Length: 402
Image (cartoon, rainbow, N blue to C red):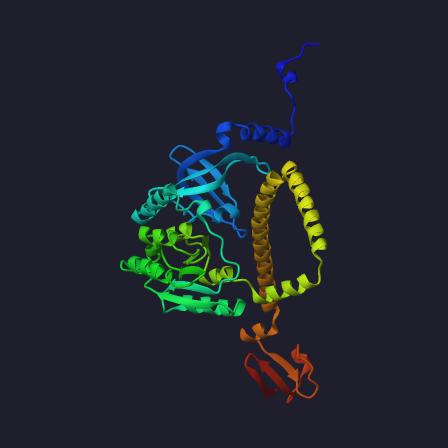
């Protein structure tokens, strides 16, 4: 029998075809790590914190996904219409067969003067080595005096004092007050950092509350960055809220998301220390060493197993599928609620139509024999001088036949 070219072609299921295409895409050297430039549209941040949007230009578009762990490092999340460039890799979402760009890094393009200056200074100081990990110093485990550079007024200083008093009341606070906003703030902040370094402090916290990029700009000043870098003692930067980043954060030995968090990172918890001391008295050094050795071995075995059986690809698809199912469930629940509401309205209208009170309002009346209460349905039921009770829409009255 003669075979055709069609007979020689393999027959695949949809899942097999998608897996084959996915393997080809993910093994491409260019698509494995690529920068893409375009405009943001259809931007959505799911309840789980993952980002979904479309990156497009005049001729084409591609769906993009950024997981919450990567999005947390973005200085400002993009908006619809933003021009951005992103770095990531191409893969397929198997459940829908969608070709998607999985993003690990986002950079805004065409931004304003402040953002451009921020990026310029960050690149310059990074090239000089001010952000280098080897220059980061460890925080003292049990500081005795902590210096604080911030405004004398406001909630920042109060929050730091409250946290330190609760966690580690042995520590002392030395304040170097300064302006933290405006054109005159940077030299004052520099002076406060340099002055407080002349005292016997073990650690320095540079802090201010949240605000806009303009409000926080004093901490993007090169002079402030260099003053932090040359501090005699380790510095914790706590400028703005968790999503705010400044040059001071990059050059400091440690960044805290908030001033309160900086205070928590600066000192140990006295309650935990007491518990540790009690526990240390109850255990032998040999037993502790044996447990540590055993734990190291188990961690090494677990790490080896994880490296050779990483579930990252399955987890990525599962996370997106959870978001899809959540949106579909929400839409279905809204649909069911609308149907139930319409059915209830219909029943209410039927009940209203059957309500005898509604009939009375249209001019009808209910006539009963006054003595027996029996409803009169015919003139033959009553004679002359019969005493009746008549009910209408707004009340009742007595009547007598002639």
